[in-house]
Image 1 (cartoon, rainbow, N blue to C red):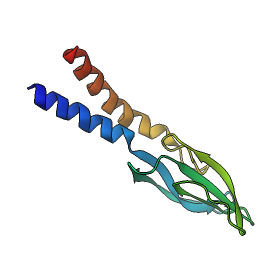
Image 2 (image 1 turned 180 degrees about the horizontal axis):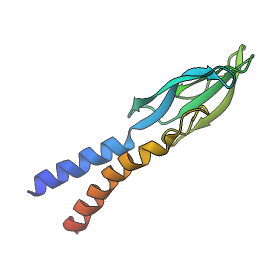
Image 3 (image 1 turned 90 degrees about the vertical axis):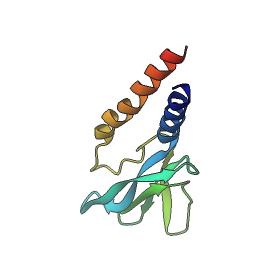
Length: 110
């Protein structure tokens, strides 16, 4: 039983540590075409990159400045690169559903 509890706790922590970022492209004038993407455990940043004409590119990883555009934002928490048209509040129940079982199992182990 303790092995099952420990496995559940480790799996839950690994799911919580995975970075989620918005990924896609868009502009304030024409809307945003994007989705929520799982960046995996190797990525700890989300970025929002701007181009001339108001277009934005957003996704996982670090923001790299190039000659055609400029870095608008780089952040290190889940869904922090909100493009403007998408609301990340819908992910709060999923996060809480992972945190509450971990807290319960940790309290039982103590």
